[in-house]
Image 1 (cartoon, one colour):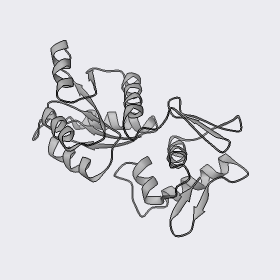
Image 2: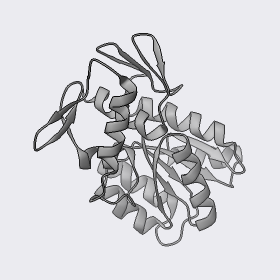
Image 3: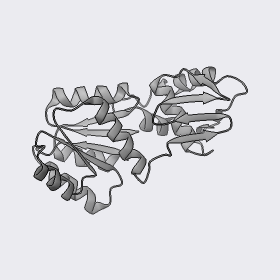
Length: 217
């Protein structure tokens, strides 16, 4: 899952992003509404975590503009204003969910995963291909009933390949889907992660290298 955190308090935004990354999500950060619109135009996010009181373009305006353009991501408003009227107003702007500060990281992550499953690009709760089974909510992967001990990034790559349903994915596609925008496109990060994933999946091999293109499962 790829998430854009739109929050003007830089320290809080960084903490939220790190918490999401620890949960296996790819998280980018925008500190104002204008930058959020630029980043949303440049990448397909599954969910946006949107603070309402943003400098530049207000969070409500961001929500309305994205809705007008048909942007497919789900939107979770995260704000200190948590009265019933605030919640009703926020949802009225086009948000899909609303969480007031202070909040529980466990609840935030659960809500984001629920929103991603509802979105147009969301994946099923359980993915199955060959003898592999991946529970995308519990973040548990198995092969032929054997539990696989995978890192969050390995799980992300496996989920992307299984969701592609046999179509090949380029290394840069995987980098965009599993890592955040700060990842170096010239690094060997994807190659190394795929190598480690292959080793943990065991034999017979199920991840195929497509010469000159990328990988498919």
